[in-house]
Image (cartoon, rainbow, N blue to C red):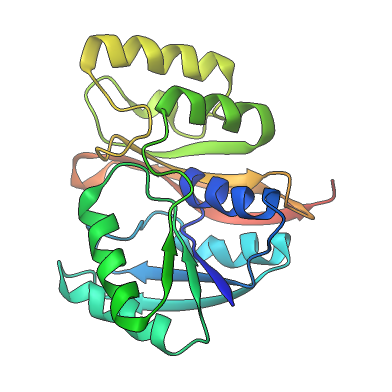
Length: 221
């Protein structure tokens, strides 16, 4: 069985898409909800709404929780993987050796193949592919030059141009691998239904700006 470590953001969504585009299918989405806002391994903002993404995608999901403590959270991931009949794990890793090496080691221990379709992807190429095929919005900003005006904005050509300027001025990573931003997918080629935010608010605690989704609904395509 092929599983995908799925956070609901741009990278795991695109990695999922790449697998299906290759003629294979993903049978299971694995999502880890972290109590730590700044987990080294797992995204926190709006992760509960991955349940609706999974329904929209028509893919079974296993949702588990972790306290998000550095290194210890790896055991929680390993437990989830070991409890399911997985032979291949797909992740959206793009440049973080911290994440990739640790997942490589877990998969090696469990005799699971780890595939990272986006590994070392060019950030601009990824953003352009997302803008062309997906509806993905920014849900967290945590870098100099990225303010709350970016929250809720779709990754499109206009936003990409702004991010390119910021890259030149502030040296941000266009993959957001340095923690510059986080994202959430509302629609894409694999979605049988799109998602629409009904209500949200902005939270500025912990020194970062986060778009918190309060309610969401399905929308026919």
